[in-house]
Image (cartoon, rainbow, N blue to C red; front, top):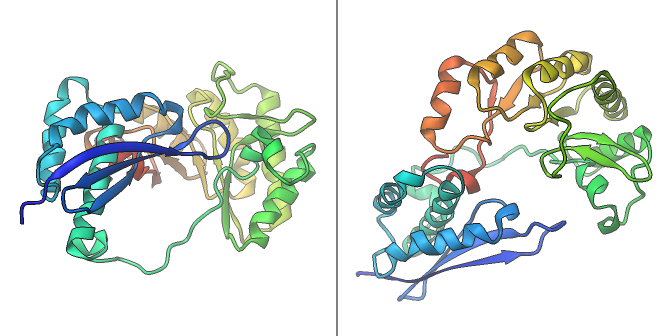
Length: 300
């Protein structure tokens, strides 16, 4: 039966703070709808428009040859590939896979060889970060001290998590964080007080949860290589699971990896298989970070 795509729509769901979650819905003439999460809520006006522009070329076509549609979208946008374009294609592709699975009556993983595992370890992400950014949205005390961050870390353990990830958080009456979630800049420098604060924060969290809980620190794009090295060296005594950093230069990451002992996690700043190739060839990471809603299924 020749199913046809009738419409491609986007919608958002209100999330914590000002940035919504974004979704794509592909509807067919047979009443089957596929859904895909895409992009970042930071771009909740631009990305839906891109999906409409790119997706318009799929109207009236059979949604099931997903790989063909992915390649057609890639060819269509080669002159403006990457970035928001890749995120828009990802949302469409994920919705196409969801639709194909529904049409076949099976989960998508059955279409690609079946599951590898039936259990998945997860970590509490941005622990303390959102509470510092949006204290009015939490029915919790404000993070006024490093000890409060220790209590926050213990809360993750009490909720059954064996790992958590945090950012550099400065508690106080008006707590703030070093993160690309907030449009502020430290000029990518890592002055002594910031390095010492990061070490004090992780020390308090480590003491609160003990040695059996894994801790990750995400410093995003916020430090030059020299600054990231200083932070990594300062945190070596606290047995971090990984230090996460976004950097477009694989050799800079290799320098960071070689200059301190904490495993390096990176990759969410990259889009598409070609982007990862130089980092893998350079052996500049220990853990590869992939955001499926940014990459799409085939590239992830």
